[in-house]
Length: 355
Image (tube, rainbow, N blue to C red; front, side, top):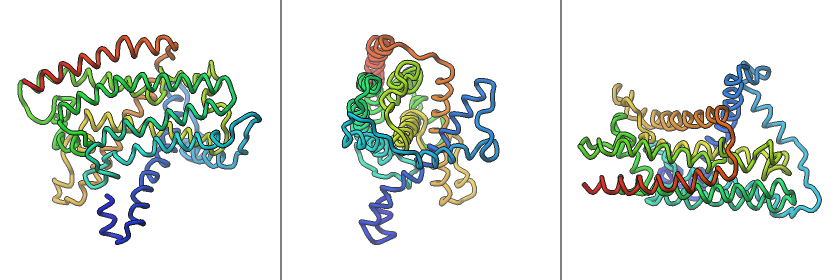
């Protein structure tokens, strides 16, 4: 994308700025839509309607809330390390935002088409942990500190099964590039990795159950990575008030919200790239049918966003379906079940790919 912008504009600095700013054009509207979607999903699952007053069926409620947060007073309590307290929410968002550089929205738009895309995402997402720890420690609040320590332990632990599943997909595809992984799953849905990949063979049939197992393990781990129910221990309103962002208000509080929903879509997009064809259509492209190849990249963006939003919806669905686990259960699920199963899945996929 950067090279295309350089050719189009002719100025490298402007091209770099536009390329870096483009994810914001997606993230901010998605967060506004995602918060409304969460409230509507919650409402309908609880036999009510959710926001209904601002705009048609409440569609402008989140926009109103966003502008309200911008106008809120920035309250900073005594005893707080103001420098790092103010910096923490922006560091958390920076870690979430940086992930979008390697996400392939279409064959024509990838922020940075690097060969180590999946490795880059694993590495840069660690900034979120540092920001959350910084927020909890500098808040001078016991609830915030508890939430930050829970989050650090949770994210670091669940990164292990996540990395093991990613490694198994790297073994299967032979690449760390998310764009190349997507291109390997082109044409139709039966070529997706969840069904064993593009090449039909006896080996592919053997892979299918382990692909489904890998998907489930990865999705469960991703819920913990983004602190979503049933793994929302870092916030745990009934125990910790608001967890690591208890002391935050106004725009700094909204940065945590931006980061949370940006992370939700990022892990959902990663699920779609690894297992469900990435930006490819499950049934072919209208552009090919009409002979309009220029339409295909726009279709790819649509399918990429649609798959990601679907898995975000499942996260919301689970939030209002499952109870929160205890801290000891959280660690037990990871260390006694997910890690051994993910390692076993890795070994079996490795053996099958050698056949």
